[in-house]
Length: 364
Ligand SMILES: [Zn+2]
Image (cartoon, rainbow, N blue to C red; front, side, top):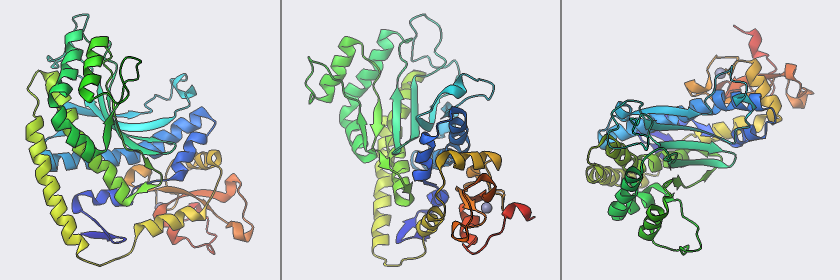
């Protein structure tokens, strides 16, 4: 076991202990230059979200004994090619990493209006970062190409299983999107909501998770992952239905209950111990307090330094959190100009004290 600030990292999610999302990430969405913003999201946010997803996938394997990547692929947004100039004009408002069905012609459970086989599933289950925080979501959109019986089948699944899905929603802090209509009261039951959807052919039924405000790290990041894995049985059901198989909701819920029980027992054992120890939180905080650089400039420096620590070479997808460091500290008259700034990872940044004016790029 690995202790952080009175809180214990279970062994299987220790990977998360090096990951944080903070106000500096939120500042990305203030970067005016669309190209710079897109690159920053791609190189800085997505690698960390991928690590979070990898942890979730390994947890799903542990809890449900399901290999997520047998049927799903990991997708990321923004997802653009450098040559696509028009996509680099977009001012992205969020970034996410999610799982969705693999493109293969075995989704016989779904049918398209035009009779062609379904290759792309209309579901995505993801972690999303936006300017205020991080949440999970299950997207059930772009259903327009599917035929009516298929879309109804997915909503009927919810109507038939609502009493099982509700507890998952609570545990996962997920809520279904609500329909606003003059003819449907705001407090209508979910059954009525789904019947209304079927009747009016409103099939885009999304689930959005609790929004964890930045900074998200430590136990709040673990909660985000917890929420994801607890809602996995619903995503899995969509996949099973899409394959034409029976859903395995009951089986997965039994496994989840079993795991949660073990988890609770474990937490009790931990709360009985009073041991406290050093903290990655303090380390991250001290690194954060060192540099306050204008967002656009910050990302320009990362761009120049190729999105890696100039001292040790680690990148954000190696788990490094990148910071901008003043080579000559402000307290020594150092400027905020490009030439006085360098990219350091969280570890190297902590190692370099305020009195140290070494330009780490000049070292081997
Ligand atoms: Zn470093």
